[in-house]
Image: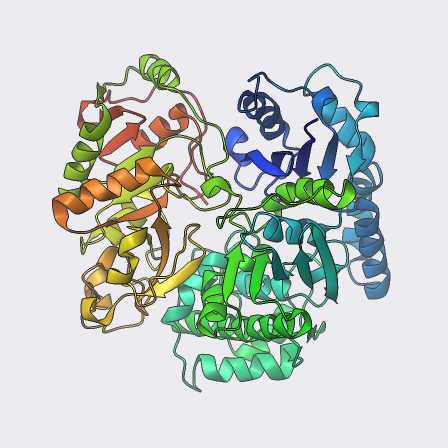
Length: 627
């Protein structure tokens, strides 16, 4: 008898749902892709419904599931334990934050103390059922992260490291996974949190907490590493903000932070005095001081991560490491672990943040609560390339085209890839909508905007005319897995775009003449390599390696581009604009295509030429280029 479990993450940010059957991931989706509200925190009603309806069709017998078919619903944390932490924190920091505490209490009581009732009410909205009979399970937050990291990994035995802002009390754990068991060996407790430490710098640099951390990481290479810049700031951080222990545990000086009981992340007055610059207003000029601050914060974070990884190796003796939690999305820190050779193998959950907690909760329920064994992985991971979301048919695309008056042509089989390669080679920017959508924050070739990485002006065009985002931010290359070593120094497999590599020295050109991250490309000295559209200031690139077995369609396109140009690589950025989630449906893709500077759109086998489309897009729906 199959064991079917629905995992849920909700009520903080990036809510999601995931369906597992006998411990295998069948379907997973983020609520934001349905509601078009970025980082949607609401109960994932649409994602859960898709798990039951579309996930059920993928099972033997091929019929939609109902709530009654579920063995359990697993929520990604323990609400009562989290409520305990909220109460004790405000008591400890009183009278600071009293007004916020009184205002928030009704919401906390509803979301934490009454969560079982809320979950049953929401499950009733998925169809006729007796929701009172549904088994509800509540693994701890960081156990959910650990389960999402270990159970799909290709390792029978591994150390586990999870690091984020905060769950219930834990802000990170070191554990060990063996077979179906996960043992927690060490915990870091709130308010001392590496995730919140990094988010504080994200806030101070003028970016949004819980979404702008990757911008801080991308800004760091523009910093001056010398003692008058980031080097001096690192010394100040270590002396005033954080005490770092040899085992990677930290103690944050709460006199400088305000997240525990206030409305701001930091004590602005103390930070301004310490660093000699005020918090940056969002959208204002990025001066050198903020670049230095980003580099200092990134450097200290990497130092802590390396100590944690070494401690995990020491405690477990394991040769492999699994990572999850929001900090595991810091691909620069991940790659430091690789370069230091602390472990033989490294695997990172592609949805490492709170959205991935839904999957971890379901897997923890299966293997820990029910005690079911893991199935042999056969050398690969269990994530199916993270292509776990909804898929749309050609009939769906044709219905969208008819409703919008869109003009299209159908190209079958190899002709589609040849034509797309020809357009990309000519300098066109292509929206690419294929198959099942990705699970996690990265576009991996099914909901992507694609371009030629050799084009000197492509990075600026994509940033300013299509993505509508800051010009300093780099773009990722997607490369044929077998060709990665031709372009990058290590050539390490990176199927989920969670590692960086550096462009081969033979492909590099003279570096930039200035450090201004908002400067035009002439001042920055583009091109910096023969792959200027994907080369960051320090010659790094956050690459995706593409395997034919995982994504045959995207691999075929890369192969066609290589056959035409000799280059087995494309720029790959997520199919969305600033402030919006990645597109899901054909209608989402067409709206984004029409509202931006993309030249062509491919949905399945249908090719849409911008020049042939009606001047006005009649499709209803939200589309905004604001952040």
